[in-house]
Each structure stands twice: as structure tokens, then as C-alpha cells.
Amino acid sequence: KKRKGEMAHDRGTAAVKAFSIVLGFVLFVLFATWTLALMFSINKDMKLVQANQNNLENAWATFLSRNADAMNNNNNNNNANTQPTGTTTVDVYNTQFQNSYTSIESGPIVDGLLNSAVNNGRPCILPVRDAPVRLPALTDLNSTLVQVQRVWQDALVDLGVRGAALAVMFEGQVVLERHYGHIKAGGAAVDAGTIFNVGGVTRLLTSLLAFSLSESEQWSLDDALVDHLPQFAVNNPYNKANITLRQILGDISGLPRNAPPGCGPEGCDLTTAQVLKAIVDNDLTLINPPYVLPSRSDLGYALVGRAVETLTGVTTYEQAVETYITNPYGMNDTTFTVPAASRSRLATGYEGNTAVTNVDLGWLRPWGGAYSTLRDMKKLLRKLSAIDEPGSNDNLSAQTLREMLSPLFMSYDGKTGQGTPFQMIYLKDRTARSLGGQISGYGTHVLLIPAIRLSIIAMANKDVDMSQFTVPAATLLINPITQQLSAPKPLHPPTNPSEFIGLFQGVNPLGQSGDLIITAESNGHLRAQDTRFSEDVYYDLTYVGSEAAGEHFVVLWKGDPLFLTCLRVFDTAVNGASMYFSQYHNGRYDQLLFQQDQYRLTQN
View (cartoon, helix red, strand yellow):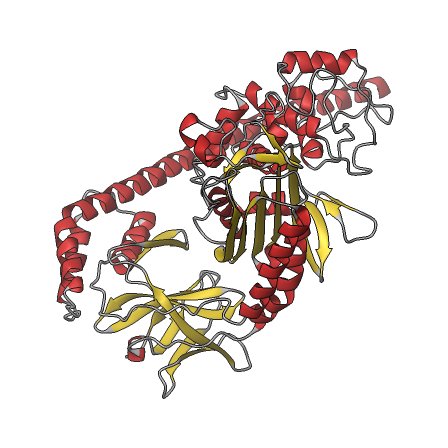
């Protein structure tokens, strides 16, 4: 009997297990079916959203095309000093704009985009306006700039330079430019178009190229060099780690400075394969452990530059620099071989009193083979100093440029370090980026202080250290510029303050409440009261200028595109933020953007 009971129990247990398995399988099938249906629905919705967005873009383009004549007439009326005439024009445009969307499939997403575009994208007639006034940025620095010129003159005498050019730039604008001497003995005077060999400043071009390729995902800066040059092999007695591109660009790879035998300081006629073989044959050894001590390596920069040639679509390093750097930046005179038509502008280099012939570094060009002009270098420095300005670096993001200008290695003193490729030096509580280039017959030095938007470039036709000018000049300028940046800006009122005053209700996409109350004082100066804070917070507004007629300022708010027109721009001195008034209607601006938030006029 006991055995029969056990057998019955076993049969019952087996039945329960079988039922559980069947039930689990059924639940799994139901869950899988539901998941697939959900994925199909999401995919269908995403395709619909994309199609709707494409339709919206096409409709907007159709609208602009259909109404081009009307918009041109609108601009012509503005040029003839015609003031807005109420709501008639706006209503007509809104009707035409709405009709342009008749083919779009309706839905909450499309309706939201459509309403946003209709309400905020209407063309308008610009009111008559006085020319905007911008006060010069450095009106209080004249005496300091006179001292900088004296430092320049003393440096030229002390260094025995025959021809040179310099530029001091603040906020991307030239505040001091000087040319000295002649291109050749008895020849034309040096000017902004005179060509110099910039030597090691070529490393800046190579670094920019490497970061550009990283941003376009053609390689990663943390790739090992051997990933792109498989034949590369170096004796590393410190560890087994591979040297990375980033380490080389930051001069912390431990590679020695010079190339192996067969490549001299005056140039290198070897190929990449021959150089890699020479490195192995000569048992090239690291002089420092990576990331322990900075050590400049011209060999390393040449290897990175030539590794670029292994990427898809790249023929030569020189061609890549032209494609990614010099062409986008408009640096038309920056080359590695001076063309015959430009040789009359090439400054003769000097070693002491001996003239130096044109030197071509060949395979070593990526570290020091570029020729350039003061005019081109100003363009480059203007790009580097305008990191946060929209559209100023279309081919390289502000984030990538900021990464390139940041220190990769800091010394134990906390005041010096190494970047890619700049050296970091401490000047009067400011971290400066310093890069020099001395090569046979020429000397160039670049110094940047991004925190105060100061940049200095000095070029000479002699193998001398031009930091003997740039560092003292920057030291003189730091305090006056800092004081000027911290000083309150003189206010400049708009022509007609009544166009801007009123209560603007906040429509922050994060759901935060708060309004801006714009008032005008008796002298016409505008002031904004920010009600988002418990205490009274005021922003004085200084009129800057306006966008050209017919241009559209496109922003995203809650995922919707806002096509804003007729912009008026004011400085607020709040973390560099600007206030944008838009949508001129019935003699008023009824919308403004401030610090990524949107506000709309709620009372007349």
C-alpha cells in the first residue's frame, strides 16, 4: 500500500509539472506575440512620424517657394521704410501657409508641428531701425597696447630679426597688428600676406586633423598606433601597453623626439614603410613610460600624420589637411609646398646672417612642414577663440575643440602641463596655451588664453624663439582685459522702446512657471524683471542689433521647430546670454527667447 501511494503521488507530481510546462509555454507564446506586435506598432509609428516630419519640411519649402515674390515685395517695402500695417499681411501669410499643408496627414504630432510653424513662422515686415551700435571692446587698453608695441620692438632688436609679423586678437577681433622688415633684402615690405615656414606650429594642423577624423568617426584617438600602422614596433621596457594616438598628440607617449637614421632635421625622403623598418632595425626605445613625463616627439607627430593615409578615402596627409582644415577655414595660403605663383611672397629665412633656401621636410611634414601667412593664422586663431559661437566651427564641434584645448597631462607643480598639442603655462592666474615652431630660417609662436578670449601670433624669418615676445605681451594684457570683461557694459537703448515692453508669459518646456516683465526707463533703457525667483531679479538690456530681413532663426522647443523672424538682439550680461525678441505684429514684438526658454506677450 505504501508503494502504491508513493506511485500515485509521483503521478500527481508529474501531472503538475506537465501542466506548469504547458502553462509556461502558453504564457511565453502570448508574451512573444504581444512583444512583436508592440515592436511592429512602434516601428510603424516611427515611420509615420518620420514621414510626417519629411512632409512638414517639404511643405515649409513649398510655402517659401510659393510666397517668394510676396516675401521679396515685403523686404522691398521694408527697404522703402514702409512700416507694418496691422494684421492684414500676417493674416494673408497665415492663410497661405495653412493652405500649404493641405496634403499632410493629420495627427497630434503633425498638428503640433503645424501649429508651431504657423504661429511662429510667419514672415513679417521689419520696422525701420537705426543702425545698431557696438561699442569697441578695448577702448581702455590703448596705453597697454602701446607697451605691447615696445615689447615687440625690443624683441625684434634683441633677436636680430629681419622680417616679422604679429597680431594680437581679443574676442576674435584684431586689436593690434604690426609688420616689420622686408621679405627679401631690398625687396617688398612684410605684410599680412607674407609667407613664413611655421615649423612646429604645423603640429596644430595635425592635431586639428586628428580630432576632426575622430569626430567623423573615421578613427578614435584612443586607438593604438599599431592599429593603423601594423608594422610599427618600438621597444617598451616599461610595460606592454600599446602607444595610442592621443598619447602621441599630447607628447606623453615616451617616443624620442627625432626620427631614426635616414631622416635628418633638414628633411626625410623615406616612405612610411621605410621609416617603420628603420625603427625596428635600430631597436628604437621609449625614453619615458607613457603618461609619466611629457617629452616632445616630432617623430610621433609624423607617424600620426602618415597613419591618416591608411584611412578610407584619404590619399595623403597633405590632402587631408586641405580637405578638413585649410579649405573649411579659408586658409588659402597655408600649404606644404609654396606654389610658383606665390614664391615672391615667401620670406627668405636666415640662420644668423646666412640665407636659408626653401626646406621641404618630406615625410616629416606633419610635425613642421607647413607654410602660412599672418592672414591665415588669424583665421585659425579666430576659429579657436570662438568655441561657443554657433556656426563658428561647422566642421568641428565646440565640445571637440574644448577637448583639444584642455590639458591632457598636468605637472606636479599644478601650473604647467601638456595638451594636444599646446603646452600649458601659468600666467597671472590664467592658464595659457603655448605652441612654438622653430625650424631652419624661421620662428613662429602662438599663445592662447581661452578664458579671456586672447590670442597672439608672432612670425619671423629667423630661427628664434618668438615666445620672447608673445609671453611678455600676454602678461601685460591679462589684467586690463580681465578688468574690462568684468566691467559693466554701457547700455544702448533701442530706437523705439515701446515695441518691447510688456508682460511676457513663460512657456518653459520643463513646466516651470515664471514671467519676464519688460519695462522702459525715462531714458529709453530697457530692463527685464525675472519673476522666476522669490527676490527681485533684474537684467539691464543693451541693444545689439538685428537679423537681416527674411532670415529665419530656427530653434527647437518641445521638439517643435520654431521659425522665428524679425529678430532683435539684446545683451543681458547673464552668463553671456542674449535675449531675442521676435514676431513683429501690430507694432510690437510678441515673443522672446532667453536662456533656452520661450516667452510670449500676454498684455498690450
